[in-house]
Length: 146
Image 1 (cartoon, helix red, strand yellow):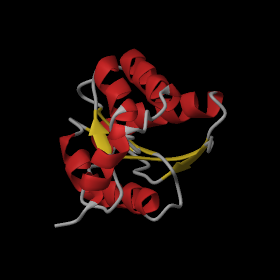
Image 2 (cartoon, one colour):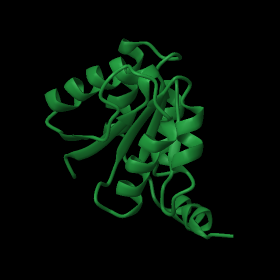
Image 3 (cartoon, helix red, strand yellow):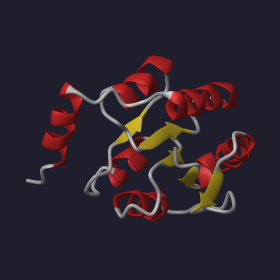
């Protein structure tokens, strides 16, 4: 299993990103921080692009994105070929995003989930394998562009 991951956020989720980086390091992951680096207001799309490009291009197998609600980041990330970004705020959804969709970017809303839940979601997302089988055919269909 690849123990490298890229993470990015906007200003609204900066503090949660910093805490998740610590959690990932504690779990033995090498973390690339794509920004933002302060709580100063920024355009979330700039950071969503950095993470999505790195996952789409194969530099990183997985990424995590955070913004206020997670909505903008998930829209941004899913514009990239091969990216399956899943906006999750509960354990069941995060588990199914991995089992059935092989989600390679976890998206969370920093104003939606608290620290403890976010940590649980990240851990579950990292630990849950893709089931393959019939789900692989569905992913191939998802990856067909236009």
